[in-house]
Length: 226
Image 1 (cartoon, rainbow, N blue to C red):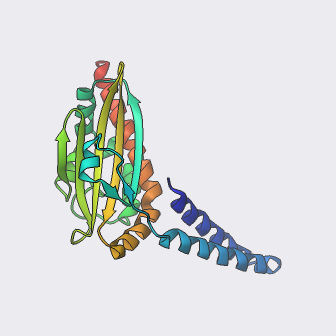
Image 2 (cartoon, one colour):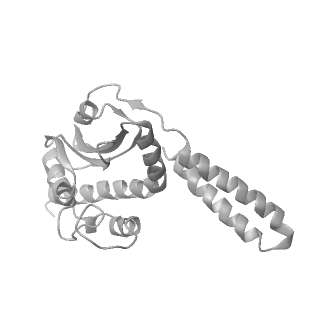
Image 3 (cartoon, helix red, strand yellow):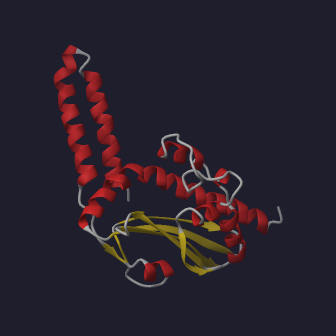
């Protein structure tokens, strides 16, 4: 759910609209109210306490490795390919294959270049390889069923992120699932990451959806002999 991010961005738009109203004498009072409401909404969205979540079962490796977390997102898609073909695609997809990936990561890093990492990947390298040589590590690898990678997002080890790709066969197709979980180990780290997460969550959501679409295209192409 992105209710907090929706509140943040809609409140920001309301505040901007209020600024526009200040330019016209007859709407200045309404504009002031809009700005106050918008700023208040943004503050609520950014600083609302994050609640703890717990895995209800250990059906997947990510449940065992990250049983407690505060921030998450989950996406899934049906893929007409075998688990082995899907995992080949997971390991082969590049940033250029993922819709909006390069655009959104360029925005995230403020247009700056620098060394290769997940926000500044080589266009010719598989994105999973880029992640694993720039701060991520393999937490579990049960290919062609599940792979879990992780990283530290607030040092030193105050917030840990885990992301998986899970393939669940059913009938002639497979369900491909990706989930990201972040656990902050103390209240200060939780507050700090909550602000960051609520700002970047919509872009992260688009990237994850595009990532699954890219894997699906590549796996189904391999399955059809294309």
